[in-house]
Image 1 (cartoon, rainbow, N blue to C red):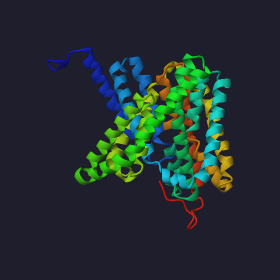
Image 2: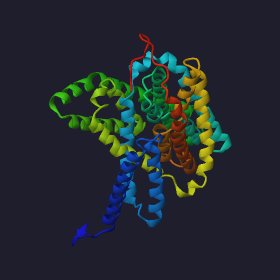
Image 3: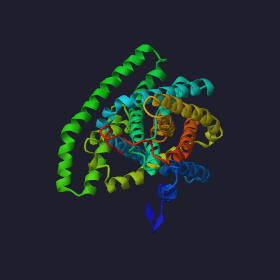
Image 4: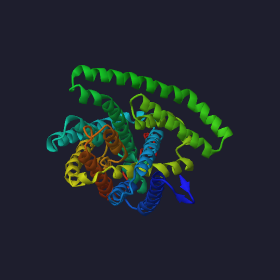
Amino acid sequence: MIRGGRVGSLGGVESAIGVFLIGVVLASTVLVRRRLRRSLVPPIAGYLLIGVLVAAIAEPLGALTDDARAGFELLADVGIVVLLFRVGVESDPSGLRAQLGRALPIWAGNVALSAVLAYAATRYVLDLALVPSLFAAVACSATSVGVAIGVWRERGAARSDDGLLLLDVAELDDLSSVALVAMLIALVPALLGDGESAPALLRALGTFAVSALVFGAACVVFSKTVEPVLARTLRRRGSRADAVLLIAAGALLVASGAAALQFSLAVGAFFAGLAYSRDPEAVRLDAALDLIDRLFVPFFFVGVGLHVRVDALASAPAVGLVLLVAAVLGKLLGGGLPALSQTSPRGAWLIAGSLVPRAEIAMIVMEEGRRLGPAVVPPELYAGMAVVVLGTCVLAPLAVGPFLRRPPRRPKPGGAAPERG
């Protein structure tokens, strides 16, 4: 309420502080993105640090008010939807099927070993409970497509034979991680509330399977019937900007529907993106979607930094180091050894090293767990995984980049996989 030109209530003051902080953060993300644009360090690392710094500075001053936190939470939720929708849209199921025979062994090896090592490190080295260890395992099984392929694009090698194989494996990693976190969220009540009993787990799995079938069938029907008609109508009668805004609105609606079915916003957004992947030109190259991406996605990573509690920072480096070792070894060994049967030793090293970065999917897994409570993802594990994201996103591109100055072998005429990227 405003009286005489002044803010006349505590709520008004809190709202003003929240808007101010959001403005500062938005400007900071732009500066970080511009600063890191030509470096091998992805902006994601900068966004995480912005969130940590804002929490460390604003919290003691009382500036991180309830209104400010609510604003950041809402922007982070929209950021999750936009991020996973974009990942789904830029997936290429048809191209993936064509190369599945080559990608499958590398995917199976890197996902399985990463998950096993992360589970063992969390359960037996860090001495955490079963459920947090399972969340750590799923988070470490993921790969960041953006970070993984970004360095290859910088070196002009993304469309080489090895680059396309890497993209296929990274897409499979994303698909499996989204499926695993959806299933894990469905199992959490049984794992926590019913003493991990077999009947409770079976009931939870049955409910999850039915919900997944219903939701998946709805997405397939939408993709094959509604989306083509909607795309043609929007192209003929609306501006490109309006079309993208309506598509983004549809993604939000699908994501909220998935959340109502006991999945999550992230899972719903990913499958909404897959539904549009049949017609990627409707979204992929549009500047309007890119603007939405730049506006909202950084707030998810900033929100992760904001949720890294000060009292967990002391243990974060130790926890993060244990998880970092497991995360790196899981991809290097689990991905590199199977890759030797599909490419040269140099190509296998490049693919395995490029699978090491963890970013969006890993932290979405942690964020979903954090929202279920500290019994699912305790603060020290959440902060430790943020350390893993920072470490892998900075170190992996620096390690792989120099070896990509000479592009890996190109596809042979007549035997190349379709170009994607």
